[in-house]
Length: 309
Image 1 (cartoon, rainbow, N blue to C red):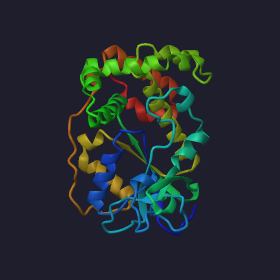
Image 2: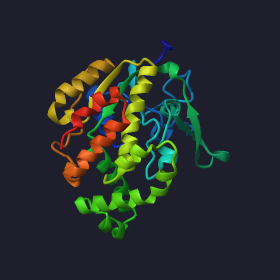
Image 3: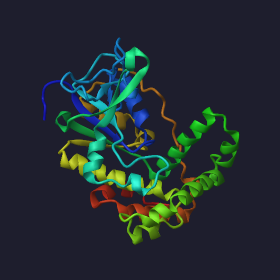
Image 4: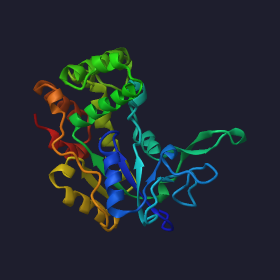
């Protein structure tokens, strides 16, 4: 591993599991900048180029917009890795450990377009040599998948598509209808996919948004395998712990990042928010059976806390 320069600490998270909140609260508490694998989210210099975190790694990661006290020794760096595509079938979301790990460090930088007009994105992939630690963010699977549904709704809210929003409302019926539409879209692809075993396909039955739950289970399994393969010291952060023990949760994370707590704990965490009521008890039982079947033993030890109805 490269010892000179800022050290990358992956903030590994399945999308909508608390990534943004975790980044914001640590930024405000420490007053230090962070980084991202995805240049479109990063800071641009005066010439219109994204700013690499390290001079010896122009392929990324890239500095965030916030500057504060500058760049710390250990820099929390956003990555969603692979196998997390939105509204896609198994042909796209099933990953190997190798493809997943590559995706963790694959992003893109922004640079000026042709003749200086506009901007363009250039695909990048940085070396594993600069990655020295990881924070593995985990959220209750039932809340995580509903949060992805909410993200989809936000896009239709921006378009003011009232028909879609009324059909797929945020209550039980709206969420269940949305999942049914998504599930029906990929039935044929699931039946033809040679990497989904018959036992897994059978477990899909009766689970709303079952593809997303498979992605969730696969993602956490491959995240554990990747951090172990790269021998990364890892801090596991459960999103719900911001609710049950905010101070203990942020202090443990700051200690892992070797940062001092100097600022206010903003933004405020919305306590008591859960979406388990958007599933029936039978569906919750089936979901956890699917997750238990798909994940590795090491990943299950991290996720079994959610095995209740």
